[in-house]
Image (cartoon, rainbow, N blue to C red; front, top):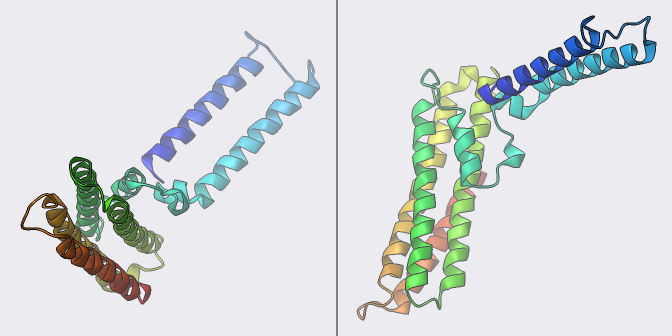
Length: 225
């Protein structure tokens, strides 16, 4: 269970306990079965429902178990929080999680730099470049999603006897991320030279094609993982 989930549950229990004290305490409302049967039974029922709901949430909720819900991860901040929840020094995947966090931060910074360059220069290729940057970012997100999923399976004890296989799987995803980040570096270099007289659209077009082809190739590789 994540620390955030634990804190939320503790707060909910405290609030419920305070309400019970207010309702049942002889010095306050002094509600009892004999004085007001309906309210007494309703409060007891609410307590039971809250307890059962909390138990189901803790034992079945993905967020409660792992600190995140894969279906709700949408942007870089979401993925960072999910990775941070797995950044435990006693984890066999500590180094891999650190690397994934570095890659995530690198992709965010590269996209910011690209947007700045496009705002400063000729924006003829703006749409194509931003679309490609988003594809690269989504590719990296998808790989991190697979990493998180594999670590969650390991943590659930199902994959504890396959640590080496899981590490190899995760490392291949990290290597794919590095390849795309490398292609992104080439793209940034060409975009930064758009106004340079020695640069031309053919070179930028080639870099665009290379990065697109790399994404297609790597997607194919990862589908086999």
